[in-house]
Amino acid sequence: MLDTSTLLERAKSSKRHLALLNFGLARMIPFNKPHGFKIKNIGDHSVEVSIPYKKANFNHIKGIHACALATASEYSSGLVLLNSLDSKKYRIIMQRMEMDYHYQAKMDTVVKFEISEEWLKNEVIEPLKDKESIVVCCEPKAYDKDGNHLTTGHIYWQIKDWAKVKTKL
Image (tube, rainbow, N blue to C red):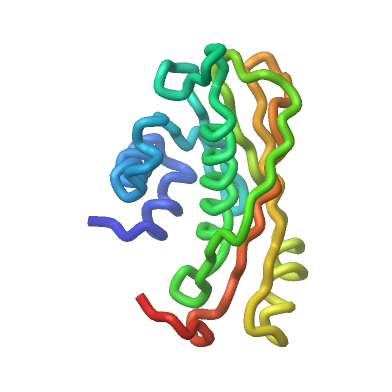
């Protein structure tokens, strides 16, 4: 069995490994499984996560529920951070989440999130040299298949070197 970091790396260039990654993540994160989230594309510092327009994701007016949009925003930003940082060196945990809803989600949706190598260095790696932990704000955005901007998430992640974590697994 492949470890998650190897699978993430291979999924960047292989449809087969991307399918394996989606299969594995649906089982590793059972809360997300009913939503049917799928990673469409994954890069070194980017991801696109699809949310299907299906009954399990509907609100009372047959739009994609606000909580499904928020969960996919958390999922996408967390995936990018996990993919960009050494998970054996850094622990990430969500501190808080805020969502701005711009347009009703009435069709298949994609949540996109991307960071740069420079952002990673300036906002995470360098500050952690002097601080025990840091909090970064990630801003994933959701769009429907017509290109309407549906949401902007503000997902705040606490990042800490595992060596400085007081509570162990």
